[in-house]
Structures are given as structure tokens and as C-alpha cells.
Image (cartoon, rainbow, N blue to C red; front, side, top):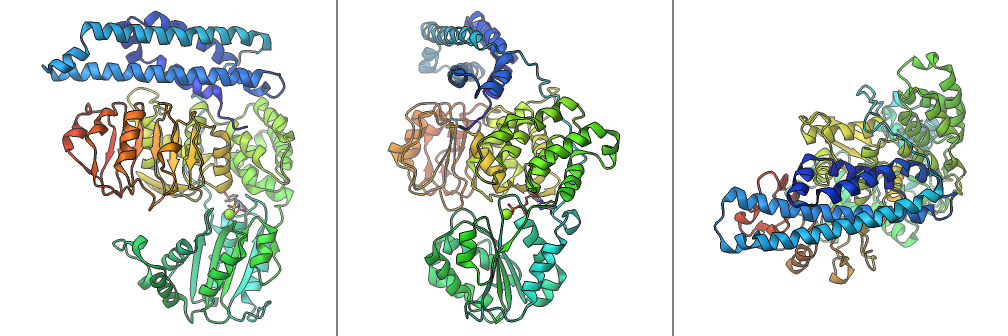
Length: 637
Ligand SMILES: Nc1ncnc2c1ncn2[C@@H]1O[C@H](COP(=O)(O)OP(=O)(O)O)[C@@H](O)[C@H]1O
Ligand SMILES: [Mg+2]
């Protein structure tokens, strides 16, 4: 079962409830006492939640108890959002000094009375539900655990070992073996003279991509091949997309697509001819990184297209699957082994301590070695756990990780999820919640800080520590912290802007921790749970009305894939009227003409992203309807 900590959800709710704005507003609406009562109970419950999380698999009924608390927290959040909405409306009217009768009527004393009693009723309801659940909780005998909220930030200096040769430990032998294969002139195991395919196989996080990069960047490879191309294959083995990526990758920019070209409108014939003109007669090295496709037909189709290179051209493939490797390989698979224990320990030390400091802490070092053994030679596990223990000098924390029950989880063979989950558990609460949002984006997605910062800020997950720090700066610190804990990779820091990816296993972890609230809808999605609060739409066929939840709780809708956008204003209308708490709406790549006026009804909307879409705001006034400072991010093409 997925596990975003209920503790994090209640923690974020408590943060909201503690804000001055809520306190003021709740006084004004006469619901102060009820809200305070709810907050006090939630504080008490929250104190035992961490213990409950740890024991949820040992005590019967505890999981269900946690789920009930989670639902109450979500309902409370809806109520607070409603509250916030009403308060905003009131402020807008007061500020504009509007004389419109209709608007005045809306805030007339009778209406306001009705609102008051509705809110009081709802708040009382969630309060009494929480009281009941809280008293049920006493039977579990849970202990109060105090957490050093938010004070847990221990960032390493901002230099990260890049994937340059010097930061890779213990792979020299493997690299030379692969180099030998690349240098052999005549390798045509299946009689296919022009194309030799070398598969590198191993479990996720073992270092296949790292090894392939080491080889790819070796100077000898430049001398061996006229053309080098690196293509990352995401979940879908989409021939068309692979062709586009091959055309765009590596040297020979003359055939690459310029930014102005509309690649989506190009037919296959054109693409294939472009591909051929790039690779025909060239001795090339093509890396296909992380293949999941086991459909032989698709592979043969691609192979036929690319076997026009000069003799000696080679394809290097990385994959987790033996059967895919033997389907594609013309040579026996290169089976990558785990890193030796000594190398793993060196890697761990590099991430867990400042250089040379480990000698000062022999106790930690001993426990660290035992933790490393449990990572079974997988560098990703070693690195993330090492980073998550960085500068934590409390022996108990290390012992906790070493002795965690998670290691005993029934796991698939060679699964490193326990190691990653333990690293996740070590994140401070505010980062755990933020992290789940990565699950909304596809694997191999290239993030920019702006995108994810806006998303977090829109959902109130970013908190200024001293009140004066800009939220964008705080959010950037969150990103840097996730990076320093090895949750991000391929991190390019251009100062204000940064770009990064999330390793596919870390992405799996994000999917694992994101509960039903986070939903990625693709072409195969049949329906979307009523629990969904954050929706990512990645398939063009997944926009049917019926799919979408009727509940009003949806807070996010986004289209993260280029070429997949909304193509119907009717659906947008439905969303607008249904999801009044929507906070983040990204209509990138949408292809209908105007943004409807009704968009202004989304009074809680914090970010409206229209990058790459043809949508013209039908009337700029509809955007101005938002109170300044409410809509924090508004991006047009
Ligand atoms: N030999 C190594 N030395 C240091 N770090 C490594 C090594 N091999 C892998 N890593 C790190 O481990 C992580 C996972 O490696 P990666 O090559 O992406 O694994 P895979 O492709 O097998 O899933 C990366 O962050 C990488 O930097
Ligand atoms: Mg890889």
C-alpha cells in the first residue's frame, strides 16, 4: 500500500490553521472556538501519528485508523479552502468598493449568516469526527513522538559529484570490457554486418547508465565512431519518438530539428528520410538507455530503420531485463555485477560524511558499514541512504535505519525499494509532501525549478522560515536539499534556473508514496478515483468526461507531456464548474482557441500555466478579476 505519511498531511494542516489569516477570519465568522478545538485535538493526534506510522503493520486496525484521520484532514482542508474563498471574495468587494447590487447582496448579512452557519456546522462535524477517532486511538497505546519540525536541514556544501569519470567508483574493469567489445571490428553474431547490439543488464540503480556514460565519454570512442548518439527511452517504446530523439541527439546538428519546426506535424516518411540522411554510411554508436520494451516486432522495425550505418556501427542498450537483452543483443549480455563491499563503503562515506570526518565517528562508521551491506552492491541505494544520513550525528538515527523493519519487507528479488523508502523516511516532513508531486510527471522528465516551485507554492507547501524570505527562494532551497540527498540527478545549475531529472527508481518511490490522491491518467485509464486531488494527464484519449471524479476535491490538473493537451473547451468548462478548489491548472499544449470567462470563477487558483498552448485569454479582464497576489503565477505562451 502506498504511504504518504498521514503525519505530513496533518502537519501541513496544522501549519495552515496556525496562520494569522485563518485566526482572523475564523473570528470574523464566529467559528473561532470550533476551529481552535479542532486544532487542539489534531495537535494531540498528530503527536502520536509518527508512532502509529511505524506500528501500522503490527497492530490490527491501525491502518484503518490512520486512513480515517487522513480523510478527516482532507475534509478539513476542503472546509478551510471554502473559508479562504469566502474571505477572499469579501476582501475583493471591500477593496473595490463595488456598488453592484448583486455583489452586495452576496455579502448581505443574511447570506453571510447562512455561510456562517454552514461553516460552523461543517467545522463542528469534522471536529466531532476527529474527537471520536482520537478517542478510538487510545486503545492502540501509541507514544507521543516529538519531531524537530523543519529544523532538520543539514545541507552539504553545494558541490555534488557529477557523473564524471572521477566520481564513479570501481567500474574501471567493466568499462574496459565494454570498450573491448566496441573496438572489435567484426562482431556480427547474427550475420547482420552493419549493426552489432551490446546489451548491459542489471537491476535498477546498479549503475548501467553510469557505465554506459563512462564508455560514451571515453576519448577512444570519439576516434572509433564518426557519430555518437544517446537516446533515453522512456516507458513507451514509441518508434516515432525514438526517431525524433535520434535525429536530435549527438553531433551533426544540420539535420536536427530547429525550434521553429513543428515536429508533431511531420509524417513518418519525412522523419525516416531525415533519420537516414543523418546516419546513412556513418559509423555510429547509438546508446538506447533503459529499454523496457519486449515487443520484438517494434524492435525489428527500429533496427531495420537504423541498419543503414557503415559496417562497425554499434548499438549499446541498457535494460533491467534479461529477456529483453537477449531479444535485442547480437552478443551475449554484459551482466553488470553489484559494486564490491569496499567500493560501496567508499561511496557511502563520500555521501554520508564531510571529507575525512568519518574518522571522528568510529561508532557511526561501524553501523554505516552494516547499513551498506544491506544495500547489496547497489550504488543508488548506498548513495541515497548515505546522503540521507549526512551530518546526522545522532547514533540512534543510524541504528534506527540499520534495524528498520523495512529491510524485512517481502520484496521482489533484488528490490532496493526498502533502501530508498528509508531514505524517504529520513526526509523532513515538508520535503516528503513535496516529493510526492514528482509522481505526476513521466519518467525521464526534465524538470525546471520554476515548474515544480510553482506547483509546491500553489499548494501552500512552501513556508518561509522567518517570514521575510521569498517563497521562490525557499522552494529553491527545497530543491537543493532534495538534490543534496540524492533524490535528483543530472542536475544542471544555471544559478537562478536549474534543470534536473529524477532517477527512474526514485520516480518509482514517488509513485509508491503518492496515494490515490495523485493520479496519472493515460490512454488506458478506465476511471479516476473519487479520492483524486492531483491529476496529471499524459494520454490524449484520457480526457473523457466520465473519467473525472465528481468530487470537488481536485486541486491540480496538469499536462506534462509535449503534444498532449486539452482540445475541448467543454471539458474545461466542466472542470471549472466542478473543481472550485483548483489551485494549479496547467493547460500547456492545449489547442482550442479561447480561455473562457468562467475561468475567473476559480477563485482559489494560484497558478495558471498556458505555455505552448494556443489559448488566448478571451478577455484579459477575466484574469484581472483575480485579486492581485492571489494568482501567483500566470504564464502565457
Ligand atoms: N560506480 C559508481 N560509483 C559512484 N556512483 C555510482 C556508481 N554507479 C552508479 N552510481 C550512482 O548510482 C545512481 C544510479 O546509477 P544509474 O547508472 O542511474 O543506475 P541504472 O542505470 O542501473 O539504474 C546514480 O546516481 C549514479 O550516479
Ligand atoms: Mg539507467
